Image (tube, rainbow, N blue to C red; front, side, top):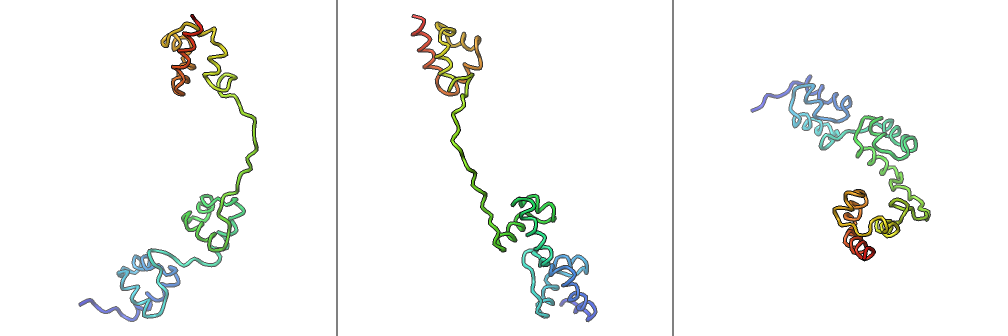
Amino acid sequence: MADRLSGRIISKIIRSYNIVNGNAYQTSNKLDISCMTIIRYWRKEGLKINRRGGRIVPRKEINKINSFYKTFKRNANKTSKEIRCSRSFVVKCWKKHGFDMKKPEKKQEKKERKYHYRGSACALDYFIENIERYAGLKRNEINLFDSGLYRTLYRNSNLDIAMHLSKWCSS
């Protein structure tokens, strides 16, 4: 049967509750007593036990976390590094206090289409606009002559079309 703890040790266990914010694991390391023993005595005293290593967060710290909501423009990662706590804890605090966690919608304006390949809409358009340069060339010759165009046509599955156009223009 396990040894009974003295009244002095029991009072240390109970007093440690406020020091470690209800973290039985920390108390167990400091007093060299098992976590379950500490939890048992805390429960007898009617103290709230934090589950899974959680902690009771002082109101000051929660206010500090909430103040960083605007400072860091909703950036929970920066806030967690500043406060030295987990990102998920910051998000949980913000949600609990009613802060909007949705990303702001970006206004998308209609932009004119930018040309993607050497001033043309696509590589095949460029090939057609400059067909006289490529007329009569075979695949390997186009690759040697303009490897960038060859790779782009190949990646976009337009190489066969370009080869047919090349043959058609040479005849």
